[in-house]
Image 1 (cartoon, rainbow, N blue to C red):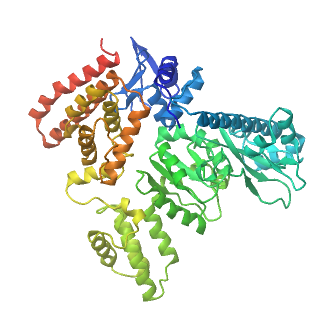
Image 2 (spheres, rainbow, N blue to C red):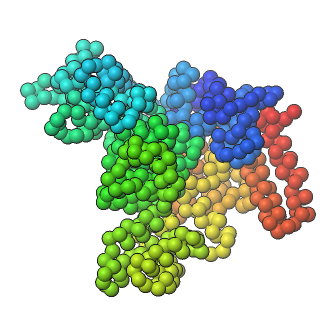
Length: 599
């Protein structure tokens, strides 16, 4: 996809009202030329979040989050840069232009936009029928019987497709659409006699939207007796791809970004019930086959993913597969144990939202879940069966942190169930971990505790998943690339103490050595290469400014000083603390000045 022109991006930033954009996420009050409030990115009692309405920048002195209006939308609504630009452009009526877009690409884009309009109209039509058609009475009663209220059904634009064969397609053709467009949008299909008929008939319609809320297709539940299949999705087409779809992601992404977690369930009504109960960070994968694309979308929305899938064999296997999909993505998986034969919607209806919230609080890590799963199916009546179970369980126990309550409990549980001494479990697990985890599933290795000294343990997360950590550092590196010679100077000024983790430091060295063409000769080390690619992509898509670069460097300097202060406090070194206080205040003052906060 062609990038938007710099002129378009600047017009979006000029048109956007920074205070208006931020206000739904943070209650702001005006203090002189600035606006302050509680930070939307972390919990705090004293306001440390500041917005400069004129320069359209924000900064939190508590957690260090900072950026411009586009960055704010990216972060709070879990969108990538182009999507954030598009959201703001649509909101403030700015026409976007693309750089060097070839005629074929422009034609494909315009066709896609037309198909999106077609599907949106269909969604509105189905929604009107659900509430205004006598034929839809059974559908309304079914939804009410599931405990779903009208306000949440309207919010998700749930609708109803009539039983007649050609209602939608005939109306679409009368409105000027072609038969090809109707079928390409997934709304019609050719009948046995050659005519065009509706794909969905006599069904409850659940619109399937992208993260921005644009409807791409539908999931449809049958209402008639003997109607098959029970659930029918839009067929794969130019807009809709089932493997990328998460039902409810458009409603869940902002709450998930704020709370740092997202809850994954299987069905449409589960999502509706959870949102109705106030758990608005819920999405559905519409089955149990969680794909890499879906996991990537989940990771963009939140750093912790709670899997609340059905407590049957397919659901359990899906959770194990999910662990493989999450490997290396910087996503923490937690498994929510559901009562057998009960889905989230039923649990909320019978026991209340508190029951489900309690299960979220009691969610376990994937290794813990797998230990319980192995024990449930183990043959504990024979020595051979216990040996097999023990061989499978030892590497799983080794994946939990050493000297932790979790590991101790698992060791006791396994020893008790298999009737073996605890050393058989704990010692064996440690020995295997020390030997390099030969029996450890590759997809689970990221859960292994770090080894080596304390510094190595602190660096391990930064090196394991560059997309999950070091966001301010990555932003700084990208801003340097976007500022030419000035950026190179700032890159050289950044010391090892400014960049936490050897991978970030190595990325700085690579960028200094290959500043004009950072992707021309990528490092051989995969993690480092990935980080360099991320920084280069961020620099290419996100505009840079001298002011933003200076603020970014000062934020790193402030964090460096505060780390030094913490170390000095731990050592009880009062002299060192006193020496660090003036430079800390100086860095804060410079950030204030750049943000327009200085008196």
